[in-house]
Each structure stands twice: as structure tokens, then as C-alpha cells.
Image (tube, rainbow, N blue to C red; front, side):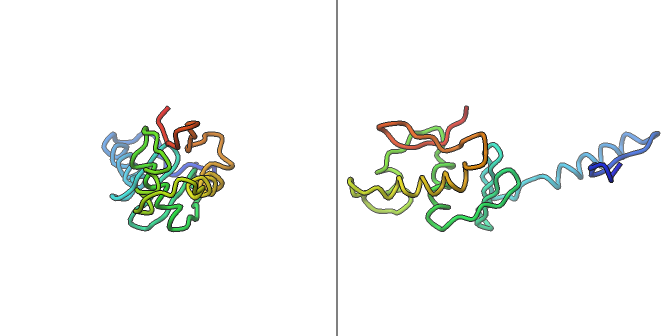
Length: 133
């Protein structure tokens, strides 16, 4: 029953229409908001400027959020530091700057640490990506 963790239940006999109505209602509860980006167990709500992973809210700075958003919206492509800098900061990258590496490290600490499935991948000598497996 409900005390054992169920969200809803029906007793026999039940009408098929009632079962289907309850299933539709449960599915509506789980639908993400209209302006979300979902990837595996990570959900980015772009209207509320929130990120959740595995049901846990992740607090990000504005730049961390923008970098994660860029990687999510352009996943399955390896991005150079130049591309990330231009896409997130909106200006030319200073080649000797490690700013991108620092922010990737911050993001990994918040988005990947504590989860067995790592989302942000380094492609050595090229850049960073979030890719579908």
C-alpha cells in the first residue's frame, strides 16, 4: 500500500478506464516543464535557472550554469576551449588562459562527483564534451 512507498493503487475489481486515467495522471506529474533540457538523470530547468541530478538540486554560479547549458545543448560534439569561451563568455579566448579548465573542474565537482555515471568528458588534446553513450 501507500505506507510501503507506493504513490497510488487500485483494489480489485477495477475499471480499465480508471486505471488508464490514473496512469495518465501519474505521467503528467512527472513531465518536465516546457523549457527544460534533460540528459540521463540531469534536468536543467531553463525558466527557473535550476539544475537537478538524481533528484538532488545542484547550485551553480551563472557562468557554471551557462557552461553546462552550452555543453548540454551542443552535446555529442567535442568543443575546443576557444569554442567554449566564445559560446559562454562571448569573446575571443586567450590561448594561455586556463579559465575553461577551471570552470570544467568546478562543474565536475558539482555535477559529476558522487555519481557513478560521469557526464562531462575530456577529449585529450582537443577539448570537452557531453556525449550520449
